[in-house]
Image 1: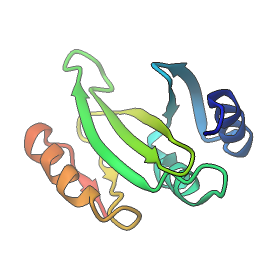
Image 2: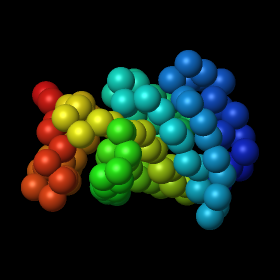
Image 3: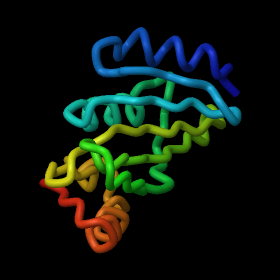
Length: 125
């Protein structure tokens, strides 16, 4: 099992301009990004030889109706190889489209449709 601090350093060093912040809590790493960096960050997490987050556990959304960036998109990933989880999140506006992860993780299809049905968040591609 890789040390959580080492994982955080590796991700921050490789994705310096794409990560807004990182936080370690509940024995997991939480990454905050900008929405336009989603695909690059997810591809790195899945394919990098030191991370190997090859399982998308869930995608969910939190609604903050009083905020300008109303929705917080949350993605949970698991790496069996290093026995770690990562929680990735970013904020979007009400009518902002989100990049779909279905080309990287086909299982995202069902989760994205559920988010659209529940919150009206639209996905592209």
